[in-house]
Image (cartoon, helix red, strand yellow):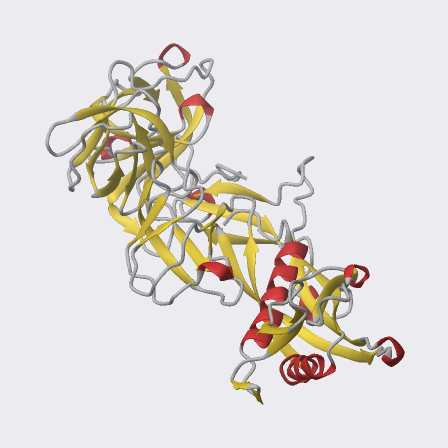
Length: 481
Protein backbone atom coordinates (compact mmCIF):
# COMPACT_ATOMS: atom_id res chain seq x y z
CA UNK A 1 0.00 0.00 0.00
CA UNK A 2 1.14 3.51 -0.67
CA UNK A 3 2.35 5.82 2.04
CA UNK A 4 -0.47 6.46 4.52
CA UNK A 5 -1.04 9.03 7.28
CA UNK A 6 0.15 11.85 5.04
CA UNK A 7 -2.72 14.19 6.03
CA UNK A 8 -3.68 12.56 9.28
CA UNK A 9 -4.77 15.78 11.06
CA UNK A 10 -7.31 16.56 8.33
CA UNK A 11 -8.51 12.95 8.34
CA UNK A 12 -9.05 12.97 12.12
CA UNK A 13 -10.89 16.30 11.99
CA UNK A 14 -13.14 14.93 9.25
CA UNK A 15 -13.89 11.88 11.45
CA UNK A 16 -14.71 14.08 14.47
CA UNK A 17 -16.95 16.24 12.31
CA UNK A 18 -18.77 13.15 11.09
CA UNK A 19 -19.36 11.91 14.64
CA UNK A 20 -20.74 15.30 15.75
CA UNK A 21 -23.06 15.47 12.76
CA UNK A 22 -24.29 11.94 13.42
CA UNK A 23 -25.15 12.79 17.03
CA UNK A 24 -27.02 15.92 16.00
CA UNK A 25 -28.94 14.42 13.12
CA UNK A 26 -29.91 11.20 14.90
CA UNK A 27 -31.25 12.78 18.09
CA UNK A 28 -34.13 10.59 19.33
CA UNK A 29 -35.73 12.58 22.15
CA UNK A 30 -39.31 13.82 22.07
CA UNK A 31 -38.74 17.53 21.56
CA UNK A 32 -41.32 19.30 19.43
CA UNK A 33 -41.63 16.62 16.76
CA UNK A 34 -40.58 13.04 17.58
CA UNK A 35 -37.05 12.06 16.57
CA UNK A 36 -35.83 15.47 15.41
CA UNK A 37 -33.71 18.13 17.08
CA UNK A 38 -34.56 21.68 16.02
CA UNK A 39 -32.77 24.98 15.97
CA UNK A 40 -34.30 28.44 16.23
CA UNK A 41 -33.53 31.37 14.02
CA UNK A 42 -35.29 34.54 12.95
CA UNK A 43 -36.78 35.02 9.52
CA UNK A 44 -35.00 38.25 8.47
CA UNK A 45 -38.02 39.38 6.44
CA UNK A 46 -40.91 38.71 8.87
CA UNK A 47 -39.07 38.64 12.23
CA UNK A 48 -40.78 35.35 13.10
CA UNK A 49 -39.11 32.28 14.59
CA UNK A 50 -38.20 29.55 12.10
CA UNK A 51 -37.33 26.04 13.27
CA UNK A 52 -35.11 23.84 11.10
CA UNK A 53 -33.07 20.66 11.66
CA UNK A 54 -29.72 21.47 13.18
CA UNK A 55 -26.79 21.25 10.78
CA UNK A 56 -23.54 21.83 12.67
CA UNK A 57 -20.88 23.95 11.08
CA UNK A 58 -17.38 24.60 12.28
CA UNK A 59 -16.13 28.11 12.76
CA UNK A 60 -14.90 30.39 15.52
CA UNK A 61 -17.36 31.86 18.02
CA UNK A 62 -16.26 35.38 17.19
CA UNK A 63 -18.38 35.10 14.05
CA UNK A 64 -21.49 34.32 16.08
CA UNK A 65 -24.48 36.35 14.94
CA UNK A 66 -27.28 37.60 17.17
CA UNK A 67 -29.76 36.75 14.45
CA UNK A 68 -29.20 32.99 14.83
CA UNK A 69 -29.80 31.00 17.99
CA UNK A 70 -28.69 27.62 16.57
CA UNK A 71 -25.80 25.80 18.28
CA UNK A 72 -22.36 26.41 16.84
CA UNK A 73 -19.49 23.94 16.93
CA UNK A 74 -15.81 24.78 17.17
CA UNK A 75 -13.35 21.95 16.47
CA UNK A 76 -9.74 22.70 17.38
CA UNK A 77 -6.45 20.82 17.74
CA UNK A 78 -4.99 21.70 21.14
CA UNK A 79 -1.69 19.82 20.90
CA UNK A 80 0.00 16.80 19.42
CA UNK A 81 3.02 14.83 20.61
CA UNK A 82 4.84 11.58 20.01
CA UNK A 83 3.67 8.73 22.25
CA UNK A 84 6.69 7.62 24.29
CA UNK A 85 4.86 5.91 27.13
CA UNK A 86 2.45 3.23 25.90
CA UNK A 87 2.98 -0.22 24.41
CA UNK A 88 2.28 1.18 20.99
CA UNK A 89 6.07 1.46 20.74
CA UNK A 90 6.30 -2.33 20.33
CA UNK A 91 7.72 -3.31 17.87
CA UNK A 92 10.45 -0.73 18.23
CA UNK A 93 10.65 2.24 15.90
CA UNK A 94 13.19 1.66 13.15
CA UNK A 95 12.30 -1.97 12.49
CA UNK A 96 10.77 -2.74 9.14
CA UNK A 97 7.64 -4.65 8.24
CA UNK A 98 7.08 -6.43 4.95
CA UNK A 99 3.80 -6.75 3.09
CA UNK A 100 3.04 -8.75 -0.04
CA UNK A 101 1.74 -6.59 -2.84
CA UNK A 102 -0.84 -7.63 -5.38
CA UNK A 103 1.51 -9.12 -7.94
CA UNK A 104 2.17 -12.25 -9.99
CA UNK A 105 2.94 -15.38 -8.01
CA UNK A 106 6.43 -16.58 -7.21
CA UNK A 107 7.77 -19.75 -8.81
CA UNK A 108 10.30 -22.43 -7.94
CA UNK A 109 13.85 -21.44 -8.88
CA UNK A 110 15.77 -23.92 -11.03
CA UNK A 111 19.07 -22.08 -10.69
CA UNK A 112 20.47 -18.58 -10.76
CA UNK A 113 23.67 -16.63 -11.01
CA UNK A 114 25.41 -13.34 -11.72
CA UNK A 115 27.16 -14.18 -14.98
CA UNK A 116 24.50 -13.32 -17.57
CA UNK A 117 25.68 -11.23 -20.51
CA UNK A 118 23.59 -9.59 -23.21
CA UNK A 119 24.80 -9.33 -26.79
CA UNK A 120 26.68 -6.07 -27.46
CA UNK A 121 25.56 -4.72 -24.11
CA UNK A 122 21.84 -5.15 -24.84
CA UNK A 123 19.39 -4.43 -27.69
CA UNK A 124 19.28 -7.99 -28.97
CA UNK A 125 17.33 -11.21 -28.46
CA UNK A 126 20.12 -13.43 -27.08
CA UNK A 127 21.92 -13.74 -23.77
CA UNK A 128 24.81 -15.94 -22.67
CA UNK A 129 25.40 -17.63 -19.34
CA UNK A 130 27.63 -20.32 -17.89
CA UNK A 131 26.09 -22.66 -15.34
CA UNK A 132 26.63 -26.36 -14.79
CA UNK A 133 22.84 -26.87 -14.47
CA UNK A 134 22.19 -25.55 -17.98
CA UNK A 135 21.30 -29.05 -19.24
CA UNK A 136 18.22 -29.08 -16.99
CA UNK A 137 16.92 -25.96 -18.72
CA UNK A 138 14.09 -26.25 -21.29
CA UNK A 139 12.10 -23.77 -23.35
CA UNK A 140 9.21 -24.20 -20.90
CA UNK A 141 11.21 -22.32 -18.24
CA UNK A 142 11.40 -18.54 -17.85
CA UNK A 143 14.38 -16.20 -17.54
CA UNK A 144 14.06 -13.38 -15.04
CA UNK A 145 16.72 -10.67 -15.34
CA UNK A 146 17.15 -8.95 -11.97
CA UNK A 147 19.57 -6.11 -12.76
CA UNK A 148 20.59 -3.78 -15.56
CA UNK A 149 18.40 -2.05 -18.13
CA UNK A 150 16.46 -5.16 -19.23
CA UNK A 151 14.87 -6.25 -15.97
CA UNK A 152 11.81 -8.43 -16.40
CA UNK A 153 10.63 -11.96 -17.07
CA UNK A 154 11.14 -13.42 -20.55
CA UNK A 155 10.12 -16.62 -22.37
CA UNK A 156 12.88 -18.77 -23.86
CA UNK A 157 12.60 -19.52 -27.57
CA UNK A 158 15.67 -21.75 -28.00
CA UNK A 159 18.78 -22.97 -26.15
CA UNK A 160 22.22 -23.41 -27.75
CA UNK A 161 24.75 -25.40 -25.70
CA UNK A 162 28.37 -24.64 -26.50
CA UNK A 163 30.77 -27.17 -24.96
CA UNK A 164 31.72 -25.92 -21.52
CA UNK A 165 30.05 -22.59 -22.24
CA UNK A 166 29.14 -19.87 -22.30
CA UNK A 167 25.77 -21.08 -23.58
CA UNK A 168 23.31 -18.99 -25.57
CA UNK A 169 19.62 -18.44 -24.89
CA UNK A 170 17.41 -16.90 -27.56
CA UNK A 171 14.44 -15.07 -26.06
CA UNK A 172 10.95 -15.27 -27.52
CA UNK A 173 9.25 -12.27 -29.12
CA UNK A 174 6.08 -13.43 -27.37
CA UNK A 175 6.57 -11.69 -24.02
CA UNK A 176 3.30 -12.95 -22.50
CA UNK A 177 0.93 -15.64 -23.72
CA UNK A 178 -2.42 -17.04 -22.61
CA UNK A 179 -3.33 -13.81 -20.81
CA UNK A 180 -6.39 -13.77 -18.50
CA UNK A 181 -9.61 -11.94 -19.29
CA UNK A 182 -9.61 -8.18 -18.91
CA UNK A 183 -11.96 -5.22 -18.57
CA UNK A 184 -11.63 -2.54 -21.22
CA UNK A 185 -12.88 1.04 -21.37
CA UNK A 186 -12.78 2.22 -25.02
CA UNK A 187 -13.40 5.87 -24.04
CA UNK A 188 -10.19 6.11 -22.03
CA UNK A 189 -8.25 3.32 -23.74
CA UNK A 190 -7.48 1.65 -20.39
CA UNK A 191 -7.67 -2.11 -19.92
CA UNK A 192 -7.12 -3.96 -16.64
CA UNK A 193 -6.58 -7.69 -16.30
CA UNK A 194 -8.92 -9.57 -13.96
CA UNK A 195 -5.96 -11.35 -12.30
CA UNK A 196 -2.46 -10.04 -11.70
CA UNK A 197 -0.09 -10.27 -14.67
CA UNK A 198 3.69 -9.78 -14.65
CA UNK A 199 4.13 -6.75 -16.91
CA UNK A 200 7.67 -5.85 -15.82
CA UNK A 201 9.14 -6.61 -19.26
CA UNK A 202 6.34 -4.95 -21.26
CA UNK A 203 6.93 -1.45 -22.66
CA UNK A 204 5.11 1.13 -24.72
CA UNK A 205 5.37 0.12 -28.36
CA UNK A 206 4.70 -3.57 -27.77
CA UNK A 207 1.58 -5.06 -29.35
CA UNK A 208 -1.42 -6.61 -27.61
CA UNK A 209 -3.13 -9.28 -29.72
CA UNK A 210 -6.59 -10.29 -28.46
CA UNK A 211 -8.39 -13.59 -29.04
CA UNK A 212 -9.95 -12.19 -32.23
CA UNK A 213 -6.45 -11.47 -33.66
CA UNK A 214 -6.86 -7.68 -33.29
CA UNK A 215 -3.36 -6.25 -32.78
CA UNK A 216 -3.20 -2.93 -30.88
CA UNK A 217 -0.05 -0.97 -29.99
CA UNK A 218 0.40 -0.40 -26.23
CA UNK A 219 0.92 3.26 -25.33
CA UNK A 220 1.57 2.95 -21.57
CA UNK A 221 2.09 0.24 -18.95
CA UNK A 222 1.24 0.21 -15.24
CA UNK A 223 2.84 -2.95 -13.85
CA UNK A 224 1.72 -2.21 -10.28
CA UNK A 225 -1.99 -2.77 -11.02
CA UNK A 226 -1.75 -4.96 -14.16
CA UNK A 227 -3.22 -2.40 -16.53
CA UNK A 228 -2.33 -1.15 -20.00
CA UNK A 229 -3.22 1.85 -22.11
CA UNK A 230 -3.96 1.79 -25.84
CA UNK A 231 -5.32 4.42 -28.19
CA UNK A 232 -8.85 5.44 -27.09
CA UNK A 233 -11.53 3.94 -29.31
CA UNK A 234 -9.47 0.86 -30.18
CA UNK A 235 -11.45 -2.34 -30.69
CA UNK A 236 -10.49 -5.17 -28.33
CA UNK A 237 -12.23 -8.44 -27.52
CA UNK A 238 -11.83 -9.69 -23.97
CA UNK A 239 -11.26 -13.35 -23.31
CA UNK A 240 -8.59 -15.67 -22.03
CA UNK A 241 -5.79 -16.34 -24.50
CA UNK A 242 -4.56 -12.91 -25.61
CA UNK A 243 -0.82 -12.28 -25.87
CA UNK A 244 1.73 -9.46 -25.91
CA UNK A 245 4.45 -9.50 -28.55
CA UNK A 246 7.50 -7.37 -29.34
CA UNK A 247 8.85 -6.85 -32.84
CA UNK A 248 12.59 -6.89 -33.47
CA UNK A 249 15.00 -7.09 -30.56
CA UNK A 250 13.47 -8.53 -27.41
CA UNK A 251 15.99 -6.74 -25.19
CA UNK A 252 15.87 -2.98 -25.72
CA UNK A 253 17.94 -1.56 -22.84
CA UNK A 254 21.67 -0.94 -23.11
CA UNK A 255 23.38 -2.40 -20.04
CA UNK A 256 26.93 -1.54 -21.25
CA UNK A 257 27.90 -5.19 -21.39
CA UNK A 258 28.04 -5.60 -17.61
CA UNK A 259 27.26 -9.00 -16.10
CA UNK A 260 23.71 -9.25 -14.76
CA UNK A 261 21.94 -11.18 -12.02
CA UNK A 262 19.34 -13.68 -13.19
CA UNK A 263 17.05 -16.54 -12.16
CA UNK A 264 15.64 -19.45 -14.10
CA UNK A 265 12.06 -20.07 -13.00
CA UNK A 266 9.81 -23.08 -13.44
CA UNK A 267 6.24 -21.78 -14.07
CA UNK A 268 4.84 -25.28 -13.51
CA UNK A 269 5.83 -25.05 -9.83
CA UNK A 270 4.20 -21.95 -8.25
CA UNK A 271 5.20 -21.21 -4.66
CA UNK A 272 2.01 -20.91 -2.61
CA UNK A 273 1.65 -17.99 -0.25
CA UNK A 274 4.40 -16.01 -1.95
CA UNK A 275 4.35 -12.92 -4.12
CA UNK A 276 6.54 -11.56 -6.88
CA UNK A 277 6.77 -8.13 -5.29
CA UNK A 278 6.91 -7.07 -1.66
CA UNK A 279 6.92 -3.70 0.01
CA UNK A 280 9.32 -3.06 2.83
CA UNK A 281 8.33 -0.11 4.96
CA UNK A 282 9.30 1.41 8.26
CA UNK A 283 6.85 1.15 11.13
CA UNK A 284 4.67 4.24 11.61
CA UNK A 285 5.29 6.43 14.65
CA UNK A 286 2.56 6.54 17.33
CA UNK A 287 1.26 10.06 17.92
CA UNK A 288 -1.26 11.50 20.34
CA UNK A 289 -3.66 14.24 19.24
CA UNK A 290 -5.66 16.30 21.74
CA UNK A 291 -8.81 17.99 20.38
CA UNK A 292 -11.67 19.89 21.87
CA UNK A 293 -15.20 20.20 20.55
CA UNK A 294 -16.95 23.33 21.80
CA UNK A 295 -20.72 23.84 21.57
CA UNK A 296 -21.99 27.39 21.92
CA UNK A 297 -25.54 28.64 21.54
CA UNK A 298 -27.95 31.45 22.38
CA UNK A 299 -30.93 29.11 22.73
CA UNK A 300 -30.69 27.15 25.98
CA UNK A 301 -33.06 24.22 25.31
CA UNK A 302 -31.57 23.15 22.00
CA UNK A 303 -28.07 23.73 23.36
CA UNK A 304 -28.61 21.51 26.40
CA UNK A 305 -30.18 18.77 24.27
CA UNK A 306 -27.11 18.57 22.08
CA UNK A 307 -24.73 18.80 25.05
CA UNK A 308 -26.59 15.87 26.66
CA UNK A 309 -26.24 13.90 23.46
CA UNK A 310 -22.51 14.62 23.34
CA UNK A 311 -22.06 13.37 26.90
CA UNK A 312 -24.02 10.18 26.22
CA UNK A 313 -22.10 9.23 23.10
CA UNK A 314 -18.63 10.69 23.50
CA UNK A 315 -18.10 10.66 27.25
CA UNK A 316 -17.42 6.95 27.94
CA UNK A 317 -13.84 6.69 29.13
CA UNK A 318 -12.71 4.81 26.04
CA UNK A 319 -14.04 4.49 22.53
CA UNK A 320 -12.98 4.41 18.90
CA UNK A 321 -12.87 7.01 16.17
CA UNK A 322 -13.47 5.42 12.76
CA UNK A 323 -11.24 7.36 10.36
CA UNK A 324 -10.83 7.21 6.59
CA UNK A 325 -7.07 7.66 6.16
CA UNK A 326 -5.80 8.88 2.80
CA UNK A 327 -2.51 7.86 1.19
CA UNK A 328 -0.22 9.75 -1.14
CA UNK A 329 -1.94 8.01 -4.06
CA UNK A 330 -5.50 8.79 -2.97
CA UNK A 331 -7.86 10.48 -5.40
CA UNK A 332 -11.16 11.93 -4.20
CA UNK A 333 -14.16 13.41 -5.97
CA UNK A 334 -17.60 14.55 -4.86
CA UNK A 335 -20.73 13.24 -6.54
CA UNK A 336 -22.94 15.62 -8.51
CA UNK A 337 -26.25 14.07 -7.48
CA UNK A 338 -27.76 11.84 -4.81
CA UNK A 339 -27.34 8.06 -4.92
CA UNK A 340 -30.07 5.49 -4.33
CA UNK A 341 -29.64 2.01 -2.91
CA UNK A 342 -29.35 -0.40 -5.82
CA UNK A 343 -27.55 2.00 -8.16
CA UNK A 344 -24.49 0.60 -9.91
CA UNK A 345 -23.44 3.80 -11.71
CA UNK A 346 -22.78 7.15 -10.03
CA UNK A 347 -21.87 10.60 -11.38
CA UNK A 348 -18.83 12.39 -9.94
CA UNK A 349 -17.25 15.76 -10.58
CA UNK A 350 -14.00 14.24 -11.88
CA UNK A 351 -13.41 10.58 -12.81
CA UNK A 352 -10.03 10.94 -14.51
CA UNK A 353 -8.03 9.17 -11.79
CA UNK A 354 -10.34 6.28 -10.94
CA UNK A 355 -9.39 2.99 -12.56
CA UNK A 356 -10.98 -0.36 -13.41
CA UNK A 357 -10.72 -3.02 -10.65
CA UNK A 358 -9.75 -0.37 -8.08
CA UNK A 359 -11.31 -0.61 -4.63
CA UNK A 360 -12.87 2.68 -3.53
CA UNK A 361 -15.01 3.90 -0.64
CA UNK A 362 -18.30 5.76 -1.09
CA UNK A 363 -19.15 7.83 2.01
CA UNK A 364 -20.66 11.15 3.12
CA UNK A 365 -20.77 13.58 6.05
CA UNK A 366 -22.89 11.21 8.16
CA UNK A 367 -21.84 7.70 7.21
CA UNK A 368 -18.59 5.80 6.70
CA UNK A 369 -20.24 4.27 3.66
CA UNK A 370 -19.09 1.12 1.93
CA UNK A 371 -16.23 -0.32 -0.08
CA UNK A 372 -16.91 -0.97 -3.77
CA UNK A 373 -14.94 -2.27 -6.74
CA UNK A 374 -14.89 -0.28 -9.99
CA UNK A 375 -16.04 -2.16 -13.07
CA UNK A 376 -15.70 0.65 -15.60
CA UNK A 377 -15.01 4.38 -15.81
CA UNK A 378 -16.32 6.82 -18.41
CA UNK A 379 -14.13 9.90 -18.36
CA UNK A 380 -16.26 11.72 -20.92
CA UNK A 381 -19.40 11.62 -18.74
CA UNK A 382 -17.55 11.37 -15.39
CA UNK A 383 -19.43 8.21 -14.41
CA UNK A 384 -18.13 5.31 -12.36
CA UNK A 385 -19.76 1.87 -12.54
CA UNK A 386 -19.33 -0.69 -9.76
CA UNK A 387 -19.29 -4.49 -9.90
CA UNK A 388 -21.99 -4.65 -7.18
CA UNK A 389 -24.95 -2.35 -6.43
CA UNK A 390 -24.72 0.38 -3.78
CA UNK A 391 -26.42 -0.86 -0.60
CA UNK A 392 -27.32 2.52 0.97
CA UNK A 393 -28.94 5.79 -0.03
CA UNK A 394 -26.71 8.86 -0.05
CA UNK A 395 -28.47 12.24 0.00
CA UNK A 396 -26.77 14.93 -2.05
CA UNK A 397 -27.05 17.49 0.78
CA UNK A 398 -24.81 15.21 2.90
CA UNK A 399 -21.96 15.58 0.36
CA UNK A 400 -21.35 12.00 -0.89
CA UNK A 401 -17.74 11.43 -1.96
CA UNK A 402 -15.67 8.70 -3.60
CA UNK A 403 -12.05 8.10 -2.51
CA UNK A 404 -9.42 5.62 -3.68
CA UNK A 405 -6.23 4.23 -2.11
CA UNK A 406 -7.48 4.71 1.44
CA UNK A 407 -7.34 2.76 4.69
CA UNK A 408 -10.15 2.50 7.25
CA UNK A 409 -8.58 2.87 10.72
CA UNK A 410 -10.16 2.72 14.16
CA UNK A 411 -8.14 5.03 16.41
CA UNK A 412 -8.55 4.92 20.17
CA UNK A 413 -10.47 7.90 21.55
CA UNK A 414 -10.40 8.80 25.25
CA UNK A 415 -12.62 11.39 26.91
CA UNK A 416 -10.49 13.75 29.02
CA UNK A 417 -12.70 16.47 30.47
CA UNK A 418 -15.84 18.53 30.12
CA UNK A 419 -15.90 22.24 30.94
CA UNK A 420 -18.96 24.51 31.14
CA UNK A 421 -18.33 28.18 30.35
CA UNK A 422 -21.86 29.61 30.33
CA UNK A 423 -22.31 33.39 30.14
CA UNK A 424 -25.82 33.78 31.38
CA UNK A 425 -25.69 37.56 31.47
CA UNK A 426 -25.11 37.52 27.74
CA UNK A 427 -27.52 34.61 27.18
CA UNK A 428 -24.63 32.52 25.80
CA UNK A 429 -24.18 28.84 26.72
CA UNK A 430 -20.89 27.01 26.14
CA UNK A 431 -19.82 23.38 26.70
CA UNK A 432 -16.32 22.23 25.85
CA UNK A 433 -15.34 18.55 25.53
CA UNK A 434 -11.69 17.47 25.31
CA UNK A 435 -10.61 14.18 23.71
CA UNK A 436 -7.33 12.33 23.40
CA UNK A 437 -6.92 10.42 20.13
CA UNK A 438 -4.17 7.88 19.45
CA UNK A 439 -3.15 8.09 15.80
CA UNK A 440 -0.09 7.45 13.65
CA UNK A 441 2.24 9.25 11.28
CA UNK A 442 4.66 7.72 8.80
CA UNK A 443 8.35 7.57 9.67
CA UNK A 444 11.23 7.68 7.24
CA UNK A 445 13.59 5.03 5.97
CA UNK A 446 16.93 6.41 7.23
CA UNK A 447 18.88 5.42 4.09
CA UNK A 448 16.83 7.79 1.93
CA UNK A 449 17.43 11.51 1.65
CA UNK A 450 13.75 12.09 0.90
CA UNK A 451 10.78 11.38 3.17
CA UNK A 452 10.04 8.09 1.40
CA UNK A 453 8.78 5.52 3.88
CA UNK A 454 8.77 2.40 1.75
CA UNK A 455 10.61 0.58 -1.01
CA UNK A 456 9.58 -2.28 -3.26
CA UNK A 457 11.70 -5.43 -3.23
CA UNK A 458 11.64 -8.58 -5.35
CA UNK A 459 10.90 -12.10 -4.27
CA UNK A 460 14.56 -13.17 -4.11
CA UNK A 461 14.60 -12.51 -0.38
CA UNK A 462 11.55 -14.64 0.26
CA UNK A 463 11.75 -17.68 -2.05
CA UNK A 464 14.41 -19.97 -0.62
CA UNK A 465 17.13 -21.27 -2.93
CA UNK A 466 20.91 -21.69 -2.79
CA UNK A 467 23.35 -20.09 -5.20
CA UNK A 468 26.23 -22.31 -6.31
CA UNK A 469 29.53 -21.68 -8.07
CA UNK A 470 30.80 -23.64 -11.06
CA UNK A 471 32.07 -26.44 -8.81
CA UNK A 472 28.74 -26.83 -7.05
CA UNK A 473 29.82 -25.10 -3.83
CA UNK A 474 27.27 -22.93 -2.09
CA UNK A 475 28.02 -19.25 -2.39
CA UNK A 476 28.66 -17.53 0.90
CA UNK A 477 27.28 -14.19 -0.22
CA UNK A 478 23.60 -13.84 -1.12
CA UNK A 479 22.53 -12.98 -4.63
CA UNK A 480 20.78 -9.83 -3.41
CA UNK A 481 21.66 -8.53 0.09
